[in-house]
Image (cartoon, rainbow, N blue to C red; front, side, top):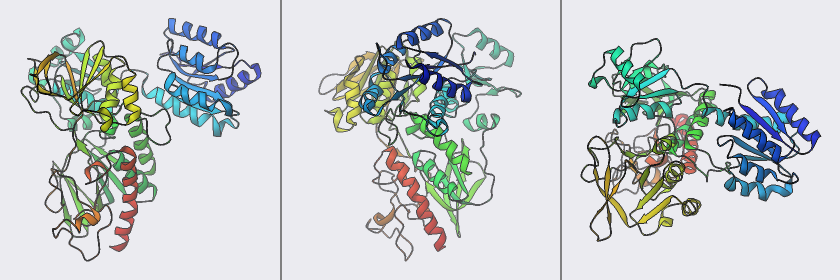
Length: 550
């Protein structure tokens, strides 16, 4: 791939020369820096780059230019550079226009002039934007190849694991790709061997488990130490926040994650109400940043490990895996989150993973190009997914059991959904059956007292309910009737002798002393990303108190 382009736009020759000089001093090794002295010239440059299939990573423009403002130019630039990051240079009086441009033209960031010194005011912003851009534009598709059927649940799970853990791969579909059939023949693979995963310098993996795939890729799946200060079960926002704060404060911390960092939030296409990100950020981006931050401070991250139990061993707590090994720690945080509730009805379970999906990653929307997509749910996760799918699908239909979308979804999402032409909301509706042989072909939708109607579709995505992932916990950890972990003072008012010690439990402590709970898995949590992050950080303070009193 040729060097990606960074385009600077300003009508003032001195300012344009200055910004171009700063960009070249920092980024000339990896990027081609170009400049334009007007909005019209910038659009000409971008059109030429598009004709030559040259990638554009960043367009940096001044707002106040004669003839065409920066915002106006960026709005038209999206046609030529749909994936580029947009940065606007503004004066103080232009702030309102910049904020409006976040929604109107997809502005990624605005920066008030002057930007001196660039090492403090300009480069950190651009580094951040380019990091996001590079994440979605790897230099190649990777050496890992996955061969399988389009409507295979096992293939879907492997691809989801790879994409959510930032492992580049090539997907080869048996029904469409000659190369896929050639590789299957070369490997002598049968139906039971699919999906087939080709890993460099290794034997092909035949229908591998997630753990065996992770091990083959060299991802960390085993602990390096015999005893930790804190073991964190689950790498959602709460778990990642705890890892960052624990490791930064010198605690030996390890995070155990079954699937991928980020939890349910990690699958969100856009979290727009998270503090400090006016344009919003994707759940994958948030998870990637937090994981890198935790690793920088020294926290370990174990992937593809399924925790099956926890037990007290004197002063330490043991987290047991589905294999013989386990982890011992002086304290444990349970932040294993929740999973989406399964729909009940004929055909729904049989077609799971073959057109019926529970949750989705942001990257999955592209596979629905030109199709009709149905979404079940009325919480923020459903709204974020609908907006993401609407970028590719011919039509997105949101099925809501209640009478008002506003009762369960943030207003900013409701407003965006109402303003999107190819999104339809059906209230008082639910899916009662799924139909299809090899994959989903149609669903039955019940509305009020009317007989269910049938709708043709290959795609049904479900975002309903919250089932805590606590089935693996034993009787020592008290939960309510729905499985949520009871913590703090609720242990003293639950009507049972749940708390075994003379001291009162710490705020997020479970009925097993030294074992804490944070995020969605905890009883009466707020079910928001920011609150989960806060609870994860708060846990570390409580762990310090617990360890000091041991």
